[in-house]
Structures are given as structure tokens and as C-alpha cells.
Image (cartoon, rainbow, N blue to C red; front, side, top):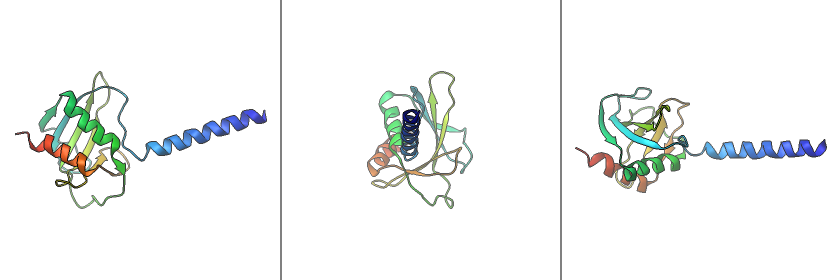
Length: 141
């Protein structure tokens, strides 16, 4: 019986450590992303439905997926500024859309991401990722 409690305690500890590690990065569903939809933002907590860019080629989708999954949790003061863009991650099938606000950094700067629905945690991308996102968003008409 003592061995069972030890095993359960060890499994519980592994579970807690795993959950804490996942909270340091943004997450997406483990499903295939069909499309990334982008609109100019109307403000925090709102999702602008006036879409100006729809990305559905695999290479560009991969850039956004990587940007989201590698963004590191870090406190940022975004209360004073509205996001630049609203990003909607659409999955294949009837899965829910991930709605994310984006404060797009200048060239060679970090960008800030925040789930539209959530606790208000912010996540920072690398400057390299910002440059890739800028190329995709700003090169479109």
C-alpha cells in the first residue's frame, strides 16, 4: 500500500510539473490549423469581424503556429494600448476558434500576444518571429 501511495504521489508531481511548464508558452489544440484570419483590432476583449487578411498556405500558417507556440509568458503593460491586430486560428472540423490579440513589434523587436478570452496573461515572441509575422501581414495589400 505504501508503494501505491508513493507511485501516486510521484505521478501527481510529474503532472503538476508538466502543467506548470505548459503555462509558460501559449498553446493551440493538437489539431490541424486550416486558416489564420487577421483583422485590425477594435480593442482588448473585442474581436473585429472585418477581416483584411486570410492565410491558408501551409508555410505561412506554420509561421503563425510557431510564433504562438514559442511565445514566452512575460508580464507586459498592454493596458494603455489597443492591440494592433486580432488573430483567429481556425481548425479543420467543427473545433472552436482560438482568438488572440497581437501587438506587432517594430522590425527586430518582440511582439506581444494575448488570448482574447483568459486571464490577461501576455506572451512575447522573439524579434525573429516578429520579422516573419511583419512580412506576412504588412506585405499584403
